[in-house]
Image 1 (cartoon, one colour):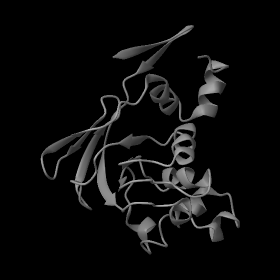
Image 2 (cartoon, helix red, strand yellow):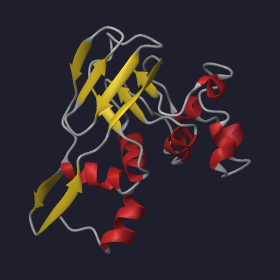
Image 3 (spheres, helix red, strand yellow):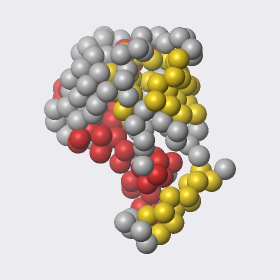
Image 4 (tube, rainbow, N blue to C red):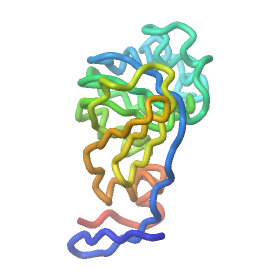
Length: 182
């Protein structure tokens, strides 16, 4: 099915985003971009495959080795605070993280993540435990905790953001559509 988002001067057709399924990897509040990917690696290489091997290692050594493709980072408030490292969402994505679910995000991280095609959802994450199996419906703003058989409603993701995510990020969106009109 295709949904349509009317955006003043244009109509953007977008497919329904897929429902994602994976394991919750839980962290707390104020996870900064240096925790996501340490500067000691960021300044040595821009190879996302190499950076992906080191995500979250200052908080949880060996974390990257334990993630499976499709897993979710689940966090508290202010995820992605600190510097505006674009490598932080890119490294998470390269590591196989399919989305980040948190109570709130630092604005610059939020923008960098969407621009680079990493889905983010804002909701109450207090009921999600590490290793819970989640099903995430980004289009409908719903996190289903299959382990606990419970649903968590998330803040609405605007259609234009869903379209940008569907295209893999803002650059891919502009390459495909030629421009960004609002």
